[in-house]
Image: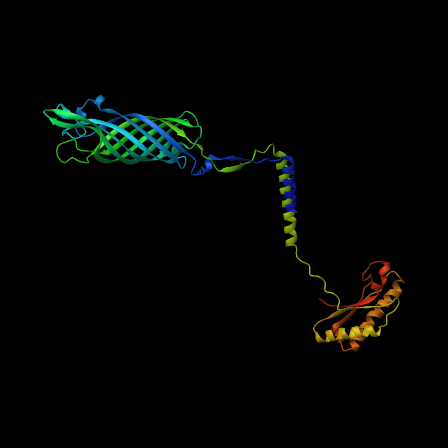
Length: 397
């Protein structure tokens, strides 16, 4: 019954308040990794750098700036982590204590004017700090990206041949024997012009293996470079990140009627539970044992038939096998025929005849009690009056 009540309330809710479930992306559940072919980009950048090595501070600061450029292809593996590979170009200017192949033959303040170009492959690991700290939002205009990486450079410079007497021949640009390693880190400030295009300002520090530029054994001493680049990035589709899909149920309208019905159902359930508990606590009545035997008679007859004697013989055996049991013999007659005097005599004659037969069969008279009942044995109506003419044999409780 309790289940039926709940089903009824539920059916009413569905009929009165139909609900339509929608499915939306939920960024609070995280983001899904895209396919490998998604989230690629290409970047081209150009800017200026200033080189720091031994003795460079003695050169005019503005004369130490040189052009720089780079081009990269990269991929974002998540809204936070990415990787890019490409090539970088630097023009490095400074002073050298000794004249090497990358120095002009003339001296300035006792030092040689040094200028060389470096170009080579580089790679960086990218971390989008804005998405990491503030969460990913597709429409965000500004992002701060930290990166760190490294690579290698080949060195190119103008070479001069000493002809003697302070005469030198310009041999043009040639690759020197220098092949140096570099490590670098920086911060890219990007601004989204559109979904496809970004403009960026890249502030970078690089550590570069130095070459000979002073007296003594000062080879491979680390030099430093600080650079700034303006860049443009094109983002290939797919550019955004998908969040997990979750179901969203619209808010329910006025539920006062549903609450009232639910409270009524709960009250009905509580009442049923109390009734059930009362029924469980009620003592169980022992069922009245069935009579050992019942002898039926025709109308106005009290004599036993041969079949009745056989039945009483079986009863006698039971009684003798259980001498401690006492048995009640009750005489009956119907109240639909005859009168009280005739019916009372029939009851006595019938029960006395049964008692005599049992005693005759060996049952001690002390085990038997003969009595009559003025009511009807079955009392099913005059149509079934034959069922009320009998003697019942029952074990006393």
